[in-house]
Image 1: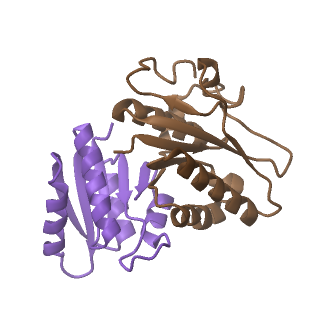
Image 2 (image 1 turned 180 degrees about the horizontal axis):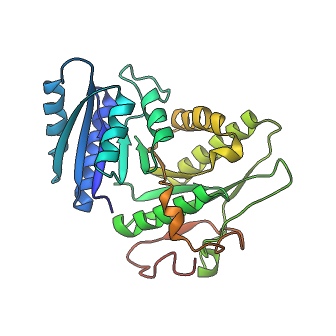
Length: 118
Length: 164
């Protein structure tokens, strides 16, 4: 069903949930989960390692994509590059607000593939 | 993992795409689909899509109409209807196949999705647009979609889309 699942990840709770869900869906499809983190100056290696660890709880191929850009651009760029079947993003910002953050909104407005907001 | 899915559709191409996508999902992940059709009757018109679910003897449709005087009111009704249906069905995911343009694209993008996310903790999936191409042209808009528990589990091996 999904060869390539791209997940936009951050250190927030919904970001971790997104990574777990993306890994499960990619794993159940025999696909690859692509973990995208956006950064301004230096990639957050600790965060990437933490997210890879989360994803590796599922039997799935994992690729990391640290991208120097804003999150929406990073996610959509990797999604296009990897021909993503599905993008998974967390719904809320790191503050835990119930409001839909700008990232899923921006992603949904810019891509053609399925977008799952968790 | 997402075994009970509510699929919210209107009569648009986005709904057709969502229907195809949801059906593929259900077959692949052995999920049960519940459909809810949303129509905007504010202007005295109704557009519907066919899925052939009714001809397959499934349960009575779940039909939900919005009739608000303003787009904001209609969007609010739409969000409430989807959230309540998800709660009623115990859905663990909502697949949305609604055309933003028909309810006001900007408002849809910035209002309905946000309201839906705020109204429910259930994950929301916006279906891909490319699934539209998989439905033969002219095969839709023939009759009302029939809704209810469209099981795509192992007990139903015949594809849901066999007659679409």
